[in-house]
Image 1 (cartoon, rainbow, N blue to C red):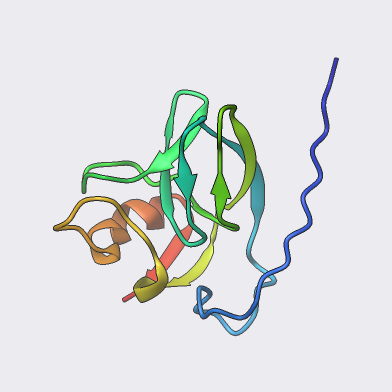
Image 2 (cartoon, rainbow, N blue to C red):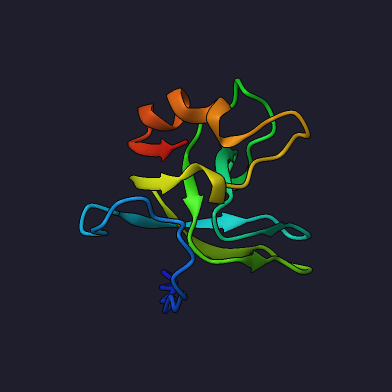
Length: 116
């Protein structure tokens, strides 16, 4: 049995995008593990079947969360941006000593440009 999830994204202009045009931004579905919250703009990596917040400079960037999602007692679907240009001051990363600038090279390999 195949399950199709359709999510309508409604976002206010929050300066997450750095480019004037979003025509080159692509997105895809992903899964957030139960008990996890990821905010819009979170830089994520893959951890098995789930996307999780990057927490170490060596993490391989997979995408940027498109809409804040809270997975309660069960896993939740979400949407991530897989490429595009983003403002570094709006990107969320884990780890107290880390910032978006620590992930510029890794994100670039994934097609994500972080403007710092």
